[in-house]
Image (cartoon, rainbow, N blue to C red; front, side, top):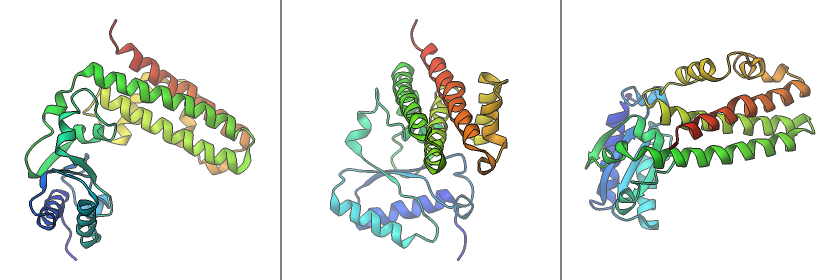
Length: 240
């Protein structure tokens, strides 16, 4: 089967949904730093689809269109009602941070330009709130995993995911043009923790070769040298 560009695939899916729901699709965008690449390379198509109404019938029709395009598209789109877009001026869902970084409208109206100029203080406050939640959850995971063994492995994965999400939100807030993972990690290490051995272990050492004590140290380092300074920097971006 021929390969499709992400933008081409997004337009095809949106058009099929619109036909199934009888002209209900107001807008559709694809997003992510690879939107100009081949969908087969990305293995998914990140989309936001804006409908005038979202009920069970609309969800069913979207599902049918996605099933028909499963060969190319493996990722479930974000569904938004048109009226909900207007309420995002001072409160943007964290999932929309990726959209604002790099997107292209592939069908219908262009609705997202206004969100790119969202009040910075509102967005900063949202990121700070999320990072504070991540910090508390990560510390709880350290405590849960301290017993060691499989439980420690499970909680370390959770801590790493919390750190990844925290870093992602910070980098979009501070430097939205940095979208590739390698750029994010490099910038973060240079800015926050040039001498932290344990945090650098996160990037270079196979976790399967680490004993429980090393994993405990790594868990604590991710929180204390990773999430915590991120929160401090976000707090410093606030009003004086």
